[in-house]
Image (tube, rainbow, N blue to C red; front, side, top):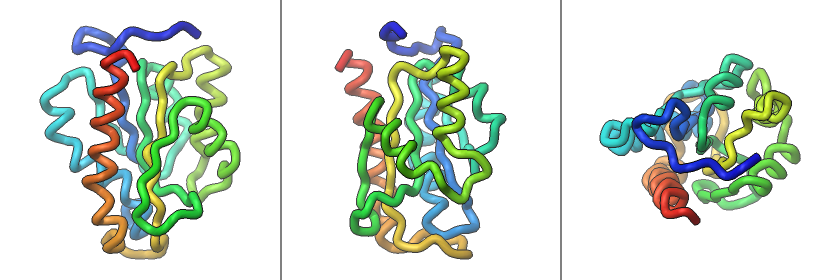
Length: 168
């Protein structure tokens, strides 16, 4: 696949920022919380689409395949301290997803990427902004460590966008 040009407001395929997780399961809601923090950024830039992907489904294959660039924000068990934010891009993201394909979601993000590969529509630029959860249990509030990580995760997303647009 060839390198894609930066998305613009005139581009049909924009940058999709996909928040994943169940808002009824404490730290699983971090994706939605980061999307809320990024709303002003998206409001100022029509090439950015924020999407709450919930607990995943095959219906997300379309939006993923249509995106020029993709940033996924999710709770991710990475063996780090709760609230740790890590950014994995491209092949590193793919490796993380294949190692941890078993999750509480109906389908895995790895499954959706496989669909995009089959249709040659996998976004050329893609990244996972993962936040290590402290707790995944019934509850509507993020743990203190994960709540404190939301601004950092949002800043990582903004940093990715700036770097990608700079051609790096």
